[in-house]
Image 1 (cartoon, rainbow, N blue to C red):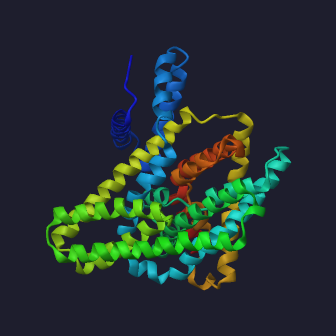
Image 2: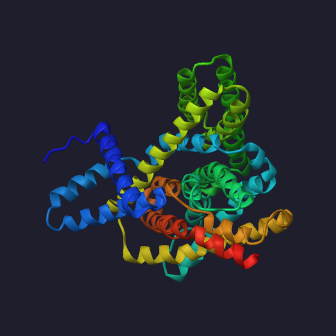
Length: 418
């Protein structure tokens, strides 16, 4: 059987699989869509691997198709822009603004502190298991695993009954700490590649400032331009097209300018979703625009979590790496809880938090495809197989176990603190 492996074939297979698995989930499992799709994709991967015992041709074809997908490029350079803009578009700024201090602090100081605590913890854990890995490579891992994934978080929290004040903190933090985490990851990876002695603190600071400040400024500029264009016409087809052009063109521009594309998309999405909705869109335009981006969000989410499940076919698992991944799950959860507690105490946020907020934010801080995409960028010579396996184990646990239990976890915590 000869199947052409090209972009159209891959896109077609991913969409068909997403539709088929989404139907099975909705018809029989009734799980949150992100969780259900990933579980079914994992089951499909296992079935294909077991089927490979009898038909290596089918397994080989499946592996070639998955290998031909550059997961990092597909997510970080394409899907992420749409998903972040769609998530930010539906975020209420008035609610976000009330919790802006803890959100900004968790997304900046919290991510930096978590990176160093998680990286140091993994370094010590690997040493305990007699696995020798340079410290800075562990910091790179700390950077990719510290940010919570807005795509996973938004997908799960849609169906979980989370107190509004807690939900906005989790959502807001995940939208912004993603951009900070990517910038920190790239910076630490460059330091690891070039050597700390060959890069100055001023150069590191400038890189971080360019990426973060540049991304936010670009997002404001894109949002304002989009706002003015939307306000000047009343034709919903054109206005929806303007938002698409703004996302795709803006993300490409951010890449060219070496600014943070994720931060640009979040900033632009919040501006259009709030200021644009209030004064630049008619009711008809608003209805079509928000429904369009809601559908984009659903379709991209479905494709992403199917791809995460199918990655099981090609990730080179070693059993001792899997055990290390399971041990790291505990480390990552303890690190997140400790960082949230330390930051809230240091910056005086305890009075703004309801009882059990930190515990809920710890269990609700999911990791997803962005962490896997960053792990795939790590060069092979920097222990990529080790860190990729650990990351994949953490992501599976995060989405399946934490994702399925978050609502029950919240109920127990709220009942205990009542």
